[in-house]
Each structure stands twice: as C-alpha cells, then as structure tokens.
Length: 92
Image 1 (cartoon, helix red, strand yellow):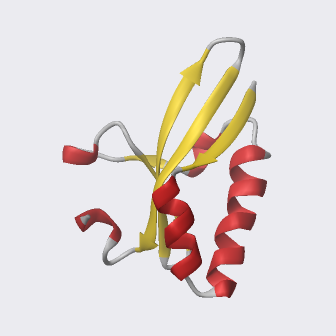
Image 2: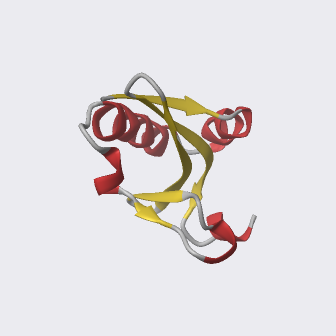
C-alpha cells in the first residue's frame, strides 16, 4: 500500500514560523515515519470529541493533526491540516 503526505497551505505557513531545528525534525518525521511506513496509523492516535476523524502525531513538543483518506488503487493520502506546539494546537 502506498502512502502520500500532503500539506495544507496553512501548514506550509506554520512551518515557516517554527524554529528551523524543530521544522527539520517535523519534516524528517513526515518523510521517515509516515511516507516510509507500511502503516503510519500505528504511530498516531485517533482524536476524540469535536476533533474525531482526525489523527494526532506526537513529535517532541509539537503535534501534527492529520486526516487520513483511503483512496482506491491501494493508495492512502495523509493530509496534514495543522502543526503546532502541544499546548496550543487543540484550541484552534
């Protein structure tokens, strides 16, 4: 099964505001753990409440909020919809 990661326009803007070291850590995580994995769901956790349907990935003090969309032809797309510090990411 093939996994692709897509970043929303908002996430691209958020990445530009983040510390360069943290940015590199987040991008490396996306490449190695999400795109390079047989099943990236095992690294994440499904969210509950008003964020149900989304997945959370923990990377140090930062969180990635994603929507995982199964598409035909054995291809799955992980849409990263938000990146932020753990104390503020859930209150947007």
